[in-house]
Amino acid sequence: MVRRKGRVKAIKTDRVNSATVIPLIKANVKPESMIYTDEYPIYNKLSQNGYKHETVNHAVKAWVIGNAHTNTIEGFWSLVKRGINGVYHSVGEDYVQSYVNEYSFRYNRRDAERPMFWNFLDRLVKISGQA
Image (cartoon, rainbow, N blue to C red; front, side):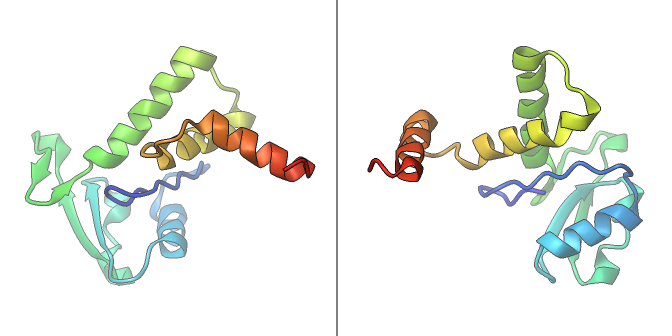
């Protein structure tokens, strides 16, 4: 899930179906929010659950319809996949969520002016009590 021009929250699931995905959306997205998705049927019940919902049908080569597109979340997943392939090369099943967390962290700080290293260092000094 990603808010346009905002933060991402990515959660590994064992099943990709309505029974799994709708509760995750309900736990993380305010009711009456506008949700843009592709045509995958698991999202068909969003309107019944109090969300505004628009889709783009990739199967018929539709990528953007008005404000409806999935480019933001697809961009995030592209970064995750390229990062894993380029840095780690492969990921064990038990560690998928850890890698997704790392790239979510990076994505959510993409606009920070100060390099992450310095923020980590400041935090480490603060935790150690040497500040």
